[in-house]
Image (tube, rainbow, N blue to C red; front, side, top):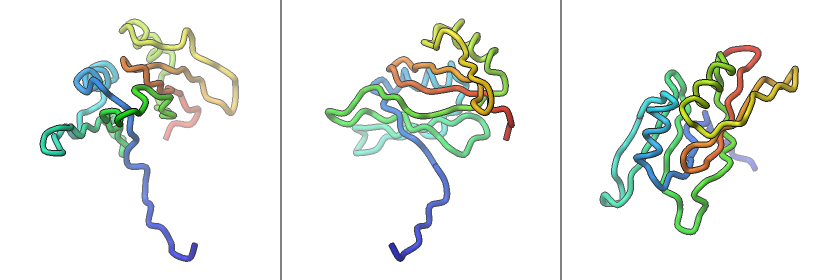
Length: 132
C-alpha cells in the first residue's frame, strides 16, 4: 500500500438497539451518558442516536439492527471507572445484569466486570491502575 491513510480517532462504535427509546433510557438514565444525537434519517424511517460518557470523545451509536443481523452482541467496549466496586454495587442495585463479582487477576490486568444492557449487549467496566 503506497498511499497513507488519514485515520485520526475511534470516533464511535455501534451497538444494536431494536428498542432505541429503551436503549436511551439505559445509557442516559442508568449509566449517566449524555445524549449527543437523536435525529431521524432515511425519510424519517430510521433514527441516528449517539450517546457519550461525559468528557469522552468516543460515542456509542445505538443503531437499529441490520435486517437479519444480531439483536445483541459482545460489543468489545471497555469503559473506565475510578471506583469499580462502587459502580458494580450501584449497577447491581439498579437491577442491571452484572457479573456476580468484580474479577481481580492482579497486575497488569485491571479489576473488571461485565454487564449487559437491556437488549443483552455486553460491555466491560474496568478500573485502570493508571487513570488518564
